[in-house]
Length: 93
Image 1 (cartoon, rainbow, N blue to C red):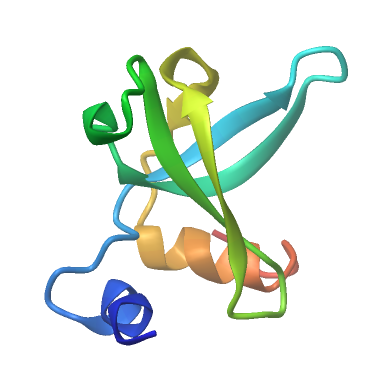
Image 2 (image 1 turned 180 degrees about the vertical axis):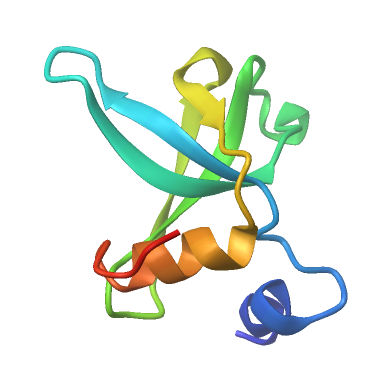
């Protein structure tokens, strides 16, 4: 839990790379998330990154390992993207 809190407010914040990830190729569904791990070699995984997807109106989320080619960086302030995701898209970025 301590590591989770530090990821949000510590000096070594982890949610600094906001992205849009294509999670369904058929319906073209995309989700907002944050790259938290770019090197997954220690898991034996190549060509993928770790992305945290926050839940709206909650301090929880899901962690997915996704193909790099499905990830598109957002050139937006991470805090604004997090606020947008946490509020279910009712705020502006």
